Amino acid sequence: MALALVLNSGSSSIKFQLVDPKKHATDEPFAVGLVEQIGEEEGTVTLTYDGEKHQVHAPIPDHMVGLDMAFKLMHDKGCGPEDLDITAVGHRVVHGGILFSQPEIITDEILGMVKDLIPLAPLHNPANISGIEVARQMLPDVPHVAVFDTGFFHSMPPAAALYAINAEVAATHGIRRYGFHGTSHEYVSQHVPEMLGKPAEMVNQITLHLGNGASATAIRGGKAVDTSMGMTPLAGLAMGTRSGDIDPGIVFHLHRSAGMSIDQIDHLLNRDSGVKGISGVNDFRQLSKLIEEDDQDAWLAYNVYIHQLRRYIGSYMFALGRVDAITFTAGVGENAANVREDALADLEYYGIKIDKDKNNRRDKGAREISTDDSQVKVFVIPTNEELAIARYAVTLAAANS
Image (cartoon, rainbow, N blue to C red; front, side, top):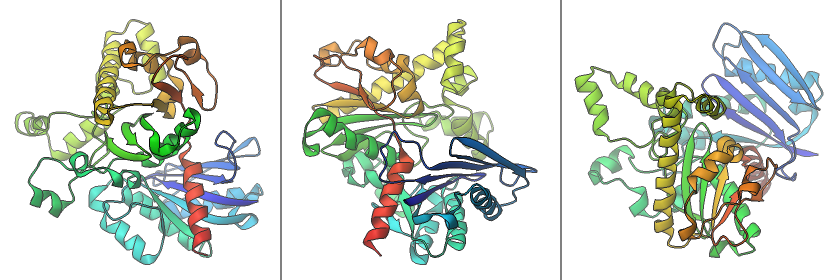
């Protein structure tokens, strides 16, 4: 069995999966793992394989030690990279800038170019790079492939991609809308034409990736024409802990009037805003429980979230001119029936009708939740970014072998 190892390296964690790229999206991966609390007094390596969960607790000073511990645990359970036919390693890289529109075989030159992009993603790219460097040392004979979150949005027209600021300043400092969650939006959108029974080039659609991070994308003929996240993942929809769109003047006001530093404002907008900033919680299950208890802050946070979501859906309907489908995906999008219903409430005039019974079913897999006579079809399609990365990695590795 030919497998791909998919790595998603964060600043203090490494998520990993062994994936059979030929499997269906709803099939369980061959193995799933997580290295967490890197750099803390004690870390944990968790592996789920063959229906069983295994853990190791020990200090994990850096990514090299963490990945080495993960590989040893996998080997002990019979699923180590040296025990299996690993044909490629796929790495999630958050920011590809304007340099990368497609997945790339990782060479020293490519890695150097990714390092040059660190100023655009100082929280994400350094961690992604650490994972790549460690994995290349530990698996030197396997092709490594970088898959960029921003790649799907290279097709956006300049009117959507550029900000209305001084052109020279923007060009010098790489300021433009890059978009994120691209692997998810692309993966989900590829399933919609088949569900509609139409060729991809004839389909206009809106995809909604709603997790703790959230983004909306307008797609025409398989290509993104607009997206809610911007130069960073802070822009767009209200999210679990991120503010989404705000008046830029708020930053100046907080600095001048509240005496807050740039780092404090950064933390506020990224870590202590959004649903959490208003209600105190960012998990939608907790938020729903608070709403049931008549917590007014939780209710307000929910309404702000829905209002922002409807605003983007409406603007993208105008941007596309004709919408064939609206698709919900990711943790909230796939599981919160109330969010889906409220986001599309009272839009029958625009040809959007939700079937409440279909929407409330807790089915797994891709499904339609609109009425039979809804002109705009509404879908729930589970995202599987790891499978998408695995397929990219194996395909590109084969093409370069």
